[in-house]
Figure 1 (cartoon, rainbow, N blue to C red):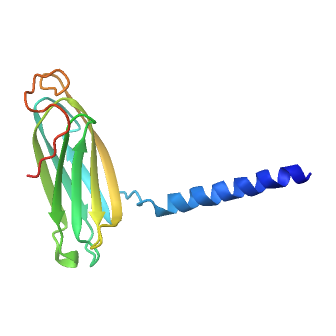
Figure 2 (cartoon, rainbow, N blue to C red):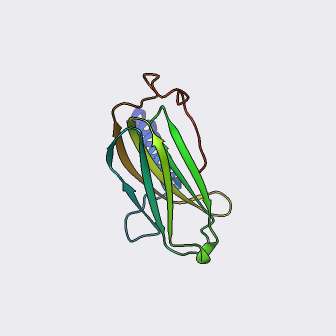
Figure 3 (cartoon, helix red, strand yellow):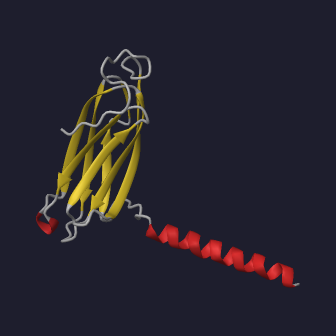
Length: 148
C-alpha cells in the first residue's frame, strides 16, 4: 500500500500546478463583456483588407489594445493606446493587402503594466493569388510586422 501513496501525492501536485497555470491565463471574453470583436470579411480573395473592430467596455485599468493578424507566415499588428474610462468604446484597425492564409485575429486588452486583462480571437481565411508561400508577393516572405 505504501507504494501507491507517492503516486497520489504526485497526481495532486500536478493537478494543483495545472490549475495554477490555468488561473494565470488571460480570460477569453465574449460579446457583452469587457472586450468583444467584430471582423470583416471572414473569408476573402487575396490581396484583401481585413477590418477589425474591438469594442471595449470603459474601465480605468484599460491602457492599450494590441491587435494582430497572424497566419504563421505573415503577421500584421497594431497597438492602440487607451485612456482608461475616457477611451473610445469602439476602436478599429484595417490591415490592407493581406496575402492568402488562414489568419488568427487576436485582440488583447492591456493594463498599465502590460498585463492582459482580456483576450478575444477570431479567424479569417484569405484565399488565392497573393501568397507569401509561393513568392508571388515579392516582399512578403517570412513574418512581417506593420503598424498602421
